Length: 282
Image 1 (cartoon, rainbow, N blue to C red):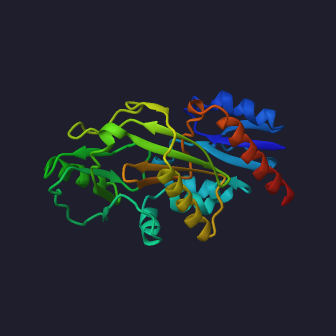
Image 2 (spheres, one colour; image 1 turned 180 degrees about the horizontal axis):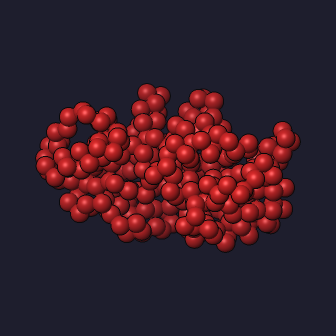
């Protein structure tokens, strides 16, 4: 069985998890190729399954990326998931379904903005890796220019309270493969109030055993998505102290395989199961 791992041109060998992931897929009997998502020479139909991995340039070409996802015949996670997950307004739907999420104010281009009287975060609804995001102290007028800049490019803006407990506790990621919790990881605080947009990789990752409450929240989110009619090969629930969900990454998340022994094998086994099902439908 043949599997394509979709990436971007600046990461032709995937991220740091790449070598371990490729070895685990080979051990499961899968012939895996790393393919750049917007390379016109790639014949996606020759693969039994295409798995989105490190397509870390999609946010600058969002419409092109959605069009590509619709054209790939057997994609995980599929084009429907990609369509809603690449715009963080999906948090509204999750909140309406009873999932505890970080309270968010949404500002479409042209809507007015008044800096909150508490520490807060500003970010665009289409982004990744904290790109174009920053944290501010209460009533900081500097955020007004930030919002105006995002609005000028046609982006919807998210304004969220700064969860101060993250400074010490960090953020917990819970990784779920084919409906089963695989492992957790800890990310140090990404945004520092008044520091502007962080540099890529300016935060650190480490192993973390998620709490029972964090595991329950991650599984609740996956169950809600299943109720929407979407099945997920992989999901990463990013959780702040509370616990509350800050993001559900089901398009191109880092999986932090290096921080959890056996996780690459678990992921490869999930990919093999999905590949077998996709191959039987060809």
